[in-house]
Length: 139
Image 1 (spheres, rainbow, N blue to C red):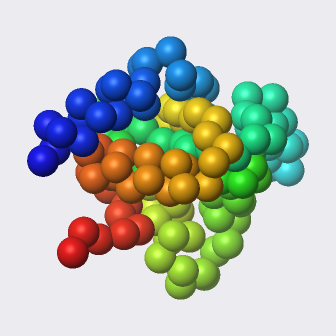
Image 2 (image 1 turned 30 degrees about the vertical axis):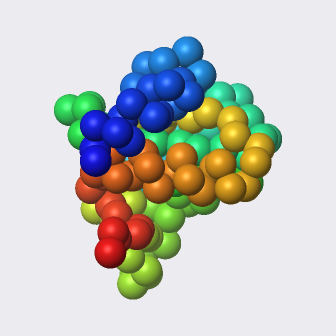
């Protein structure tokens, strides 16, 4: 079944993450040492991401896929993940995940406006890429 999912995503241009539909940039997803460093990173996120709806993927330096998600808009979602680094003492699984998995990541993203397509692509990519953080589990 994985081969069928891969073929479908390739046919639509959603796989691999290096296909022409995807955009990417490098982000230091680490606790900032100062407010100035935090603001610099927020500006980096804002300058590299769209206000459109879409899918994003976090990959680490070893090319392990850490997270697959969707955003409305993408820019707000990535800023939200970055700000999780500052939520010390949070017991939210997602907050803890981003605090425990810091580093310089490649953030891949693409715009998908249609809600159903965005949901489906997110789930199919999660199935195919098997990210370290899984927010859904197959039945």
